[in-house]
Image (cartoon, rainbow over all chains, first blue to last red):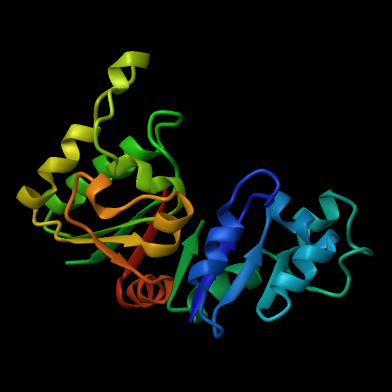
Length: 93
Length: 118
């Protein structure tokens, strides 16, 4: 069980795309920074639907996307720390 | 002794990522860590033959890949999908690397202690 941490939008880097090539169904994806923007698009809503997905709340609020991304799980920093401990390892792409 | 996997994801010379990744690999190996390398996407281009980075004044760290066996870095995995995407064949690469399926790389990620992506 690996936590994949993505901090850049697919429009600016292929990190998320590359991560999906090596991800296991039991893994979790944490989107922070500009990566949260990708869920505004249909393409990425579909591509990420099979996976456990979390968004860093502060980055969503900072970008004024709380309402648009309300369908997804938002976590705060202490949840983030907890997630890193419950997973075998974290890969920051 | 930690199992450390270093992932090369970006092409050489345009950014310092490739050189930094190789520096970390050799340094960690010299501190007795069990280092393995994974090359994916344009990261494969680090291993391409016949490069001449000095043409643009870039440091030729590519030659240093040859030192990997001396540091006992023997697990070198190259993503088969990326090979196809970039239409590369094994002869194009300067290292004897294991070309493998993404799911083999995924299982390697779960077996090592740390994965660092450059």
